[in-house]
Image 1 (tube, helix red, strand yellow):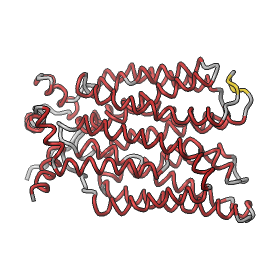
Image 2: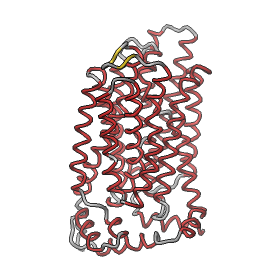
Image 3: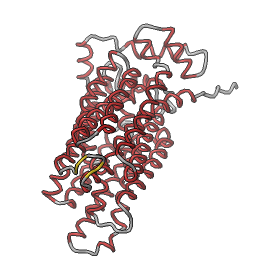
Image 4: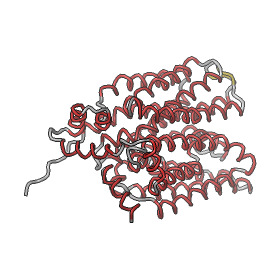
Length: 460
């Protein structure tokens, strides 16, 4: 019996690796927050920028996610006009502009502009990235390619947290400008997806693209499967609206919306933006807050890499449930720590608890909730609804992230840190039950087979 020819996947990894450069710069933007928000709150002057008030800090922390909402709209429009690859390429320009604003900043208002521009770019990336990778990837590695890019964002956060305490804001910006320019130079060298070429009616370029990604000469069968898959996207507005109203489509949109509600309870943007401040408030003395932030950034990378190798073996649902339970228990324990402090327990005897809680939270988030939802957006929806789905998911994610960041300090002042962290953890416990009973597994299935299976489930 003839042995099946081994698949060659390096070209897909190369494309994913080139795309990951912009995810690295997105991570730098997220990692910038923790060290520089702390500096802006404590130092009289940082690179010529006066100390920021609490309201100004709140806006600096929140504006990136507000910009992300508008970027999500731009990303959805780009997908149906210039295509996913070109949309990803052009997202590098607002990112570059944002870092230039930070390099030139003389007041907090420059930082407002920078955060909006970087958030706008981030919105395009999260709206488009998973769809582009889903179109070029073999089903065996589709999940791992998406998770790899999200892990590279964690690398950016780690590097940002590591650099921030020890270098000026301007030098940080110059390094980020260089990384963004690398992306703008290298990413155009990667082919567009065969799906895009077929949509444009260019069969020869689609075949050429598929040959490049698959590294084999005979791609006729897969090309015909993609053509059949895309034929369903040649629909009128009424037909698309009818498809949107179908039971399975509404279920998928409901799943994406609830994931974003659960992301609010996960409070990642709160932990990421305010981690140094949280550590200081927990009265930890055995380690400097900036050092603990850097350590957590390192563990986020390790956790993301482990998830990259496990997602196509253990599946999306398993990782989401484990991730949710880990975050919930970590935030529950963090709430207990602040309650013990309120009850006048000796902070020295509690030194390890917040360190373990924040590290456990970071490991858990990076292993599932931080990466799996983006993978599912690229897998669950038909060609007709992909752009709408990515817009709704990325837009609502940005909205809930903004809401989480804006409400953190007011809620903490109103009910106290213990009850706030327990409030977050209650929502995450609920999410793990939802994933167990309601989430359908998609590992190892082609985009075409996922749609066929969902259609059969809807008809049964």
